[in-house]
Amino acid sequence: MTLHVLEKLAATNPDCEIWFDSSPLVFASWKRQVLTNAPAEKRASWDEQLTRFFDRADVEKTGKMGFRGVTTNPPLLLQAIQDDPEFWMQEIRRIALEKPKAEVEEIYWDIYLDVVRRGAEMIRPVWDKSMGKYGLVSGQVDPRYVADFDKMLAQGLSLAVVTSNVMVKIPGSKEGYQVIEELTARGISTNNTTSFTVPQYVECMNAVSRGLERAKKAGIDLSRWRSVITHMSARLGNIGDLKAQAEARGIVLSGEEILLGEMAVLKRAYRYGKEKGHPSKMLQCSMRVTDGGPGQAASSWHIEKIAGGDFVYTCPPSYIEQLMKAEDRLPAFDAKAIDEDASPELIEKLRKIPYFRQAYDFDGMAPDEFKNFAAFVATAAEFAGATRKTVDFVARAIESARLNAA
Image (cartoon, rainbow, N blue to C red; front, side, top):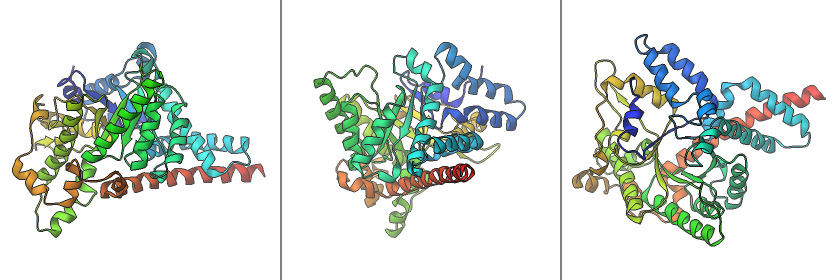
């Protein structure tokens, strides 16, 4: 049996978890595509690896899978719809005819909840068998409302009742953390997304702690409650202001230095949580593979440099496939990598850049500033764009249904 790279990573810490960063609805078609394009000599082992990660028949029979959970976001939910557009067109048309007075946004939200529900139900047996420890699917509130407490809370509550194994995904804005406190106080599991910085992680931990205190006082059952805090690795160093601010100051940063800076931020937040004994688990996403091609060494520092930690790693299909293609050229994991620090010289160099200080220093930002942090702005805009595309897909289906019914 050949272990997948991510299975080897999970072996560095018994509490490490590998999650799937896409809807379970797309897994089967993606797996077929991977195996179709696989080198002949790899096809059998890749089939075994992907089957161990997720096999629906086995999930229904045993309540077990290699993935411990699933994360989704608006672009990923859009992909799930695009994976079977005719089915979803028919679903939208059906709802539009059942609700002739409903506006596009209302029907969009109905469809969004249905995509989340269908994905969650596919792995619900895992949640049942593990008593809520595994088998959660993250459903995200609308990224167009990252500063609207009331809207996010209402959507979060509606996501939480879709099915019992839904974890509500909330952005790392000041208002988002207020929502996380409210949901936690009701015993609802949360995933903090669009989070990149130590100040955000601290604010999330504080919000969760306040929510847990309220929940315990109210006698809320927390036996199946979970909290994860996301670190969007490569987005921190590559879509924000780090490079531009460095260049403006005459600071030359290599790709390796940017990667090490991203890991320094994550490790600082991770250690803070460990020192506090906080129940939230750090979730690593937006990882990248550096691969020079056949015959060349490959690496993925976003996982290699924190091996040995008890992280959740949520991995999109493209990343899982990249690791498979490079599996023979990646270095072995060092279970002590989590204990290694970036050099003081590198941290001193990076701290000359205001953007890095915002991310790394405990007082780098106040909560009011979170939604203006460059990586947050860019990511929220990307997610909002995918939401608008999904809304337009819904609008076109509604137009067709009502035109034909007229």
